[in-house]
Amino acid sequence: MNDILKEKRLKITKPRKAIMRIITEAKEPISAEDIYMKAVQFNIKMNLSTIYRNLEILEKSEVINKLSLEGEDKQYYDLKKKIHCHYLVCLSCKKVIPLLDCPLEDYEKEVENKTGFLITGHNFEFYGYCSDCLKKIKRT
Image (cartoon, rainbow, N blue to C red; front, side, top):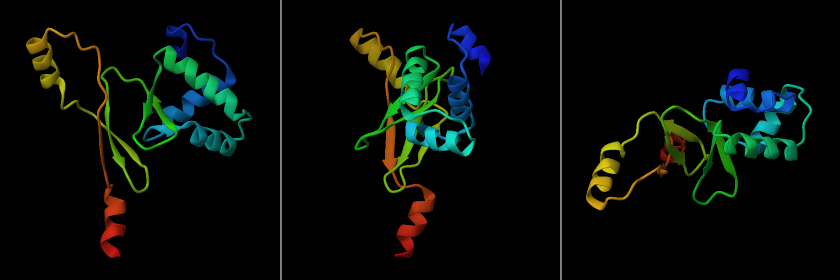
């Protein structure tokens, strides 16, 4: 964690280390509010504005990704990976599940070849229902 911050020439502060730890340990992208709740659980004292300020710095420094989901007011954050990531989003419980491969890689190259357009990135999410929510829906 500290290595990533050093590599990006970011000051290593207690709040920043705590935010990075919480994001790293999260199994899925996490919101600023959820980061705050985890910090409270770990007895780490910082307010929500500190979290937002640090998330903005970490995103601009390309340490984390900010994910805005359709129909959601809040954003989610996860660590920037060597390869970009796409997500499955549950419409019921709002769980966000990362996909580890990109189904658009070949198509992106095809579009570049056909149009001469240099594509520098894309976002892609599938919306639906996770297996836990599907079980609840089937019971009713």
